[in-house]
Amino acid sequence: MNPLLAKLQPYPFERLRQLFAGVTPSADFSPISLGIGEPKHPTPAFIKEALAASLGALAVYPATAGDLKLRQSFTGWLQRRYALALDPATQVLPVNGSREALFALAQTVVDATKAPVVLSPNPFYQIYEGAALLSGAEPYYVPSVPARNFAVDWDSVPAEVWARTQLVFVCSPGNPTGAVMPLDEWQKLFALSDRHGFVIAADECYSEIYFRDEAPLGGLEAAARLGRHDFRNLIALTSLSKRSNVPGLRSGFVAGDAAIIKSFLLYRTYHGSAMSGTVAAASIAAWNDEAHVVENRAQYRAKFAAVTPLLEPVLDVRLPDASFYLWAGVPASWQGDDQGFARALYAQYNVTVLPGSYLARDVAGTNPGRGRIRMALVADTPECTEAARRIVNFIQNRVHS
Ligand SMILES: Cc1ncc(COP(=O)(O)O)c(C=O)c1O
Image (cartoon, rainbow, N blue to C red; front, side, top):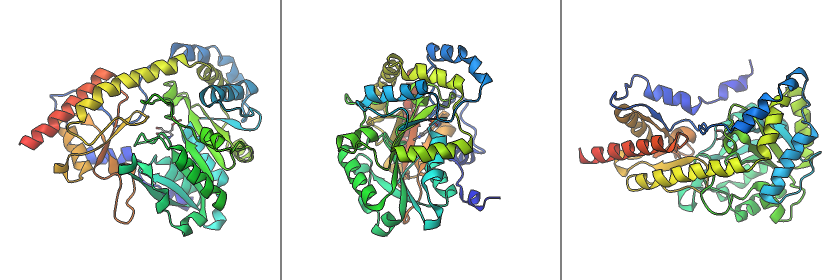
């Protein structure tokens, strides 16, 4: 057996199951889960129709690189969304969702013979860690700073760690913080990449769910604004799961540095991760339409506008830049016990939230997720507002008891 498998950590939802084991939630309340970040808005009918109309493609092996029409749907979207002109032949590749691509990219770019380090934000999406470990690298967790809108503290990374860094995961908009990385942070990271030669994997799967007027800055967009038109050492990962409410389609794409894309295509050819032609047809339809994305965003905006003000008086929480999460600090009376908060909330009000410490790692005795909870506002607005009201009651009743 591959000994690196033993290094993998239990997934946060496994830990949540253990936390709730033996707890019987109050029968006075129907269950509401704000735990899993799975989109729940309906899949647009035209995407299902495109899928159903392409079943003939099941009879052929798809090409790992995807056909030109698929790759043009990616570059067309990049042009409309970011005003970028990428070459469909060399600078994009289809992937089966960003999760597998994040993992596979690490296996492609990391050279395990050189004591590699892979940098991840802390808190973070757990695939970064597993990808790093199975590539033979040592993960290094860089804390996000609540006082700076949860910006990742790149300045805290020691020089000897930068010297060994081969890959940096950036999650913007962030899960769980919802923070978007600004241009000056990109500039800093690009300069470090130029000095140390590491690859930047920009995970952007929440880029279309945002709450400010301006759409989130993309990594490729940042590079182009800084004159880096070859996107050297940069790969952006984009997904339809959240944008188009198709988490089960498993469809996304990567874009950026043509040299990395070439090696990634080679890796993927052996790994056997071509996108089915049926999925590709539905994906082309989805990338070529923006109306459903605007409508989806409007639903999230209405939901967050209803829920956030209910929670603001009782939790340390505010509207994020983007994503579908609220990343909230528990009240001071809980003394940072996010697990106890989640368990008691579940027991008394049948609402599931994820303890923040499950999404982060202890570094030098500090877990930057401790004392926080993540709430995924994926259910419909009435259900989310009902959950928020229960959370308010839960907190107020405890304070007064
Ligand atoms: C930060 C982040 N990246 C990537 C993914 C994977 O999404 P998908 O594989 O559906 O594109 C998720 C899913 O929840 C996520 O939260």
